[in-house]
Length: 131
Image 1 (tube, rainbow, N blue to C red):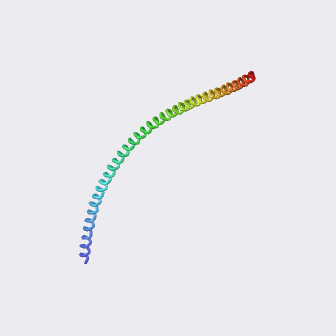
Image 2: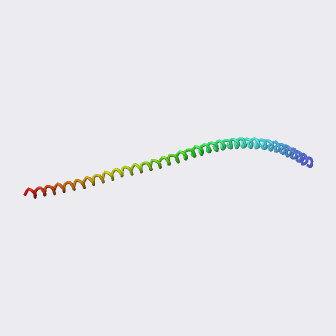
Image 3: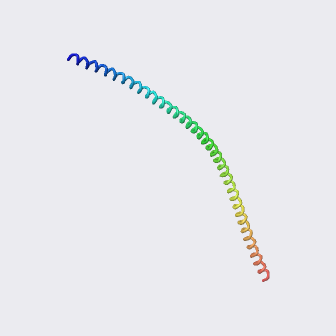
């Protein structure tokens, strides 16, 4: 019986050694696969970094374009201010013409009234002199 136990133990020992060998092989294979996966992730990470750099470049270009549009907008604002000034001056000139015309009309009315009064006085004086 001891012989059978010893044979069983030897068999068990060889199976354990075989399992150990398989575990080592499995461990090596898993390690190799993890290294491959890690390398792939590093490659993907590098690609994302490259894409990120490209987006940063595009962002910088858009910022430059935005700055140019701001400069153009400032120029248009200054042109608008100049046109507003010119429009105000033209309105002022128009108002001056209106005031000048109004004063001339008032002077003509004043003279017209004076002439009418003088004509009346002359008519009255002629009437008195005939009588």
